[in-house]
Structures are given as structure tokens and as C-alpha cells.
Length: 186
Length: 181
Figure 1 (cartoon, helix red, strand yellow):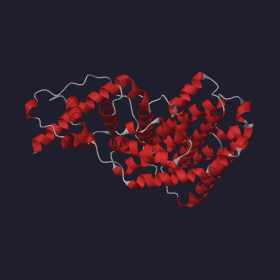
Figure 2 (cartoon, chains in turn brown, red; figure 1 turned 90 degrees about the vertical axis):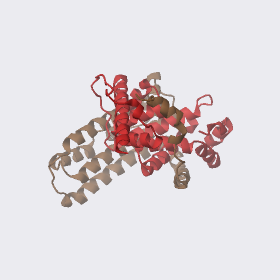
Figure 3 (cartoon, rainbow over the protein chains, first blue to last red; figure 1 turned 135 degrees about the vertical axis):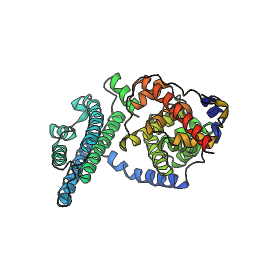
Figure 4 (tube, chains in turn green, yellow; figure 1 turned 180 degrees about the vertical axis):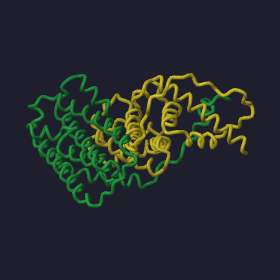
């Protein structure tokens, strides 16, 4: 490596730095933080937090189903590409979701307070997922369904994160292993 | 990086929900963390969005930060994880590569190289995303190959190979730029 690439970077390290972000980042952040205060009402629900979580899942499911129904007429088949990409996304998100479910399920049922219907809803392969998956199989090139599928994965991950955060704040982690796993996530 | 201005008092006030204290924390770290985001995402808009998301995560989790922990390392880890997650959301997958020895190109007159910051910046920017990520984390953020492998979910040997290839590619791009001038 001529003149040693690494040492060139180290010698000119400051010259690689740009000025900081625009003020709009803090403005947006501040609005978000102030909006977050209203969210404290949710935590005041205390032991009922899990009910709020389940309601959130049901709302997400309903929204996705509504979205599919509404746009079904507009769907155009494009069988060109897609499936390999979706398979990659499915593997990636499924793994992350299953990891988080394992962490949640490691807590004793009494601490979770979730009944079997709620637990079922938290699983990856619930009715909404199956509906989306079938839709995608029937319309493999449809961008809207692909988008809905990815958004579904992301919403599920966000919800599981929220539940884990709540669990972590309210209870000691069940095992050292899962605690370490959770901390590594943060 | 201006983190020396941040003391335990600021962190304690942040934990109590003091937004002004959080602003002090943000001001101390924003520039350095923004540069990480900019290098990782490659554009201003994504860098600012990622920075904002990362600081929301910092705010949410600051109660878990222990006094003796390094605030800088903790914030930096959150920022880097957000960058990596956002890249994955954009369908950037960090894949394993074959472990082959990367030979440096022979026959190049190394004295003819003119290394300039702008040339190197531009060359790094032109790297494939996986190479660029590894190179940035190693060279600019000072993570070890092992740490990068853990964060990206690939093997340490893949990281080393990608780093070597990234360096070689930068060298070739800069050489090309030298020839064009």
C-alpha cells in the first residue's frame, strides 16, 4: 500500500470530518421527545400494559387487512423478479422476530400476564401473516403486498421491542443468558 | 469529539427527564455521531434521519446507563447499530465472502501516487456498501475485526477479507484518478 493507506487516514483524520448536522435534527428530536411525554399515559396503565400491546397488534393486523382489501382491485401482476429478495427478507426478519419471542417467552407466564390468545397474536405466523403470505404467493410481483409484508415485519419487531423494554424495566431478567442477549440488542 | 463536557450530573439530569440536559448531551455528541452516520449511509438526508432515530433510542434507554460505563462508547454503539439496521432495512445484506488471499496489484509505481483527502473520500464513497461499512468501522470508528464481525453478523475472517479488498479497491480508484488528472 503506497505511503500506507492507514497512516494517511490517521494523519489527516480531522480533514475527513464534516460539520455537524443541521439544526432541524434537534428540532425534530425535541418534538419527538415532547410527544413521548404524552406516551407516559400508556405506562400509567401499569399491569394492563400487555393489553395495550395486544390491542396494538390487533389494530396493526386490522390495518394491514384493510390495506390489502382496499388495494386488491388495483393490484397488477408482475411475475418478473421479487421472490428471492422476499425470501431473504423473510429469513432475516423471521430470525429476529423469533429471537425476540424467545426472550419474551423466557419470562414466567405469571409475569407476562398474557393469555393464550394474546400469545398466539404475538407469534409470527398468525392470521395476518398467513393472509399476506398467500397474497404474495398469488401476486409475487406486487409492490404493495411486498411493502405491506415488510411493514408488517417491522411493526411486529417494534412491538416486541416495546414489550421487551417494558419487561426489562419491570422485572429482573429470567436468566443471565437472556439478559446478556437483551443488552446486546441495545 | 466534545464528550469531556459531559459529566455525571448531566447524565443524572437526563435520567430525570430534563430535556435541557439532554440537549447538552446531544450538542456534545451530535457532530461526531453525525459523521459516523454520514460515512455509513453515504448521504446527508439518511445520516440526519439515522442520527435522530439513534438519539431517540439514547433518550429511551439512558436510565439503563450505569455511571461507570463509557457514555461515548455506549452512544456510539447505538448509533452504529442504527446505521447497520437501516442498511439492512434497505435490503443491504452483509454476506460472507470466500476467504481468498487478496494480492496487491503489482507493477504500480507507488511514488506516482498523490494521496489527497478528497480523492480518498471519493474513493471510499464509491466502494460497494459492504466494503465501505467494514472499512469505515475499522479505520474511522476504531472497532476491531472481531467487534465488526459481531455487529454485522458475519465471520471475522470475512471482515478481514472485505477490509483488504476495500483497501485495494480504494488504492485502484485513487490510482485511476491520478491517471485521469
